Length: 458
Image (cartoon, rainbow, N blue to C red):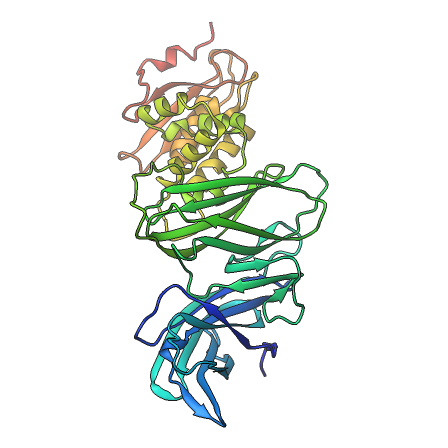
């Protein structure tokens, strides 16, 4: 049984492209949009360069004919969810014309349940079966959340028409005509990139707008262009259109990033799309690296300056003196956010996973210190016991000695596997339940072999 409901609207049109190739020229792109809690609407955009196709004459007409085939296999089950072919013909008005500057562009769309898929898409010349090209891509389908903010993939476009649109157009959606750019190629002759994306679940209890950051990075990860736009929360969902003027950009591969920043929840959400620009008349200039792409999709993207300071104060136990000095001179929330992102990314010991396990465990220890060791207007993480717990973790053994007639209360924490076995002695010298470190056998820690005198009652 097929789980995909194929929409029967594979269609095509003519568009001008920016280059000609002698080899068979077929390209595709795709974008994922929200449908429901278990399914995503997947659009596939394809492009055949007519100069790669063989002209024939049939029934008094000159034409070219391409064939598109799509095979979508669930990688877990091995089941082919979609295996279908379409004919893509086009009548040639002038059989003597050079068609290498014209493309057949089309779109197909279908509903796909969540899962990991292998997408095998192929294009061929129906009148020359040797002329063909196959592309294999892994596609992860994750249904969009239905009750929290989300952003779709980005559809690259050569043009988006808002007025006088034709509802019967193959590229018509949400009152717009969006002409895709499956080649993901722009040039000096087509220097404006248009894009289409959808934003879901915007509306909530607050009227504070969302921030949409439009960012452009070159192949070296350097930010070369940016814009910020406020989005109203009056609608539940919205379509977002935009453009990037590439006229003054040099030839390179670029990454367009759209990042939503929700300051009310201190969260951010990002979508990105790569494309290529051929612009030989512009000479590349050195651009200072400003921002890491991943930073805007991290938990640090929307926090305020004061919260950055609080996080770094809690992080100082694993910071170097140089890092502490660097942070002290930062004077903006943006700089502090980026610093914290890089600070903890550098300490991510398992970079293959999306979660920073080291950071997670570290701040779990901070939370435990605050809940157990706070005293007399001092937060637990600032106490000596809190510091030792954060840095070294839970001790293997704790000996607690309550207050006696001749001694103040104290604790001894044992770490058996550290340096062959070490211990820390904490004592409530002041009488306000703020246990101070009075002695330790750990290298680099305070050592006082006469510590027993300090815990004696006066």
